[in-house]
Image (tube, rainbow, N blue to C red; front, top):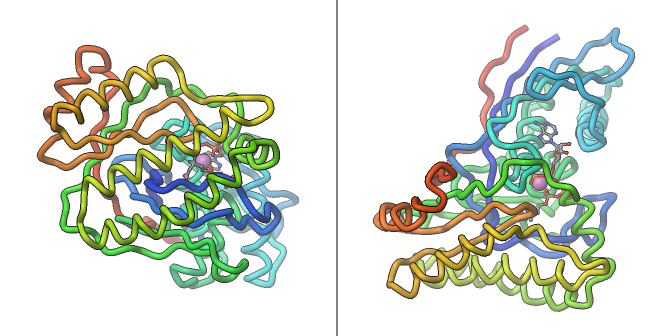
Length: 323
Ligand code: ADP
Ligand code: DP6
Ligand code: CO
């Protein structure tokens, strides 16, 4: 049987995905827009074994119970391939796991690519995006490099991501690792609870769908202040829905707010820097290459050891295919 190793990079949403309109089909409440990152990724190796009783999974070399999201992707691959073989999945994260740095995005994009190829399938990028989505929504976007939009779509077949043209801008992201610890509440659980209980949620859905379209226009115009403003707004509005959920909840830690405050001070001093946070305490600062040094200088006294500067990364690729 063929063994395939694929690499997919994480992505950070500029316009967030937060909540599903159909959890079984993994259909999002709104469209979202993201940048794939050069320096954070997952490598996943898949072999299908005819004579194995059950799927197996190792993460960073440690055998683990097979996550339900892995089973979801493998089940879909088996359906597409028309066979019932079990799979051996080995994955290595070059990103902190479950810390709000999008490990599920790189993980399930890598699994979709490696798994489908190991099953002898040659899926189109759109079909890979759909397959990755069945593992983790944000993974639909990590099939692509650079910038991507994951369309809300009308159903299973068209709720997929596609690449967006790169604006004429040297986009950079400064990742401030406030904590690499695994989150207490998964993204899946937190977004479901927010959608079910937050009175702010319907407003967020309406605003965020419009914001995705506004972001496409701002990117096409290479309008960085507008891109940055929309990015920060989508993130903060998403976090506001969580504060209004029942029970009220936040991923923010004191250092998260401190970094955001420093970003606001930078902006007041004329440096284009915009903060975005995901389902975890870590802050990503969107900026342009020319301003990285000024931002790093401002953050170094308090967060010197916790900074990672990165930029747009490549599409998911097959690293190795062996019989
Ligand atoms: P993150 O912010 O890192 O995306 P999520 O809460 O969305 O966190 O998802 C974390 C979950 O993703 C983990 O509990 C784990 O089950 C799964 N995961 C992370 N890395 C991998 C991987 N390489 N292969 C399979 N599943 C993974
Ligand atoms: C805050 O894709 O991790 O990072 O689809 O349930 O696996 P599941 O959730 P996930 O959610 C990501 C949420 C986010 C925003 C984003 O990446 O768009
Ligand atoms: Co995730």
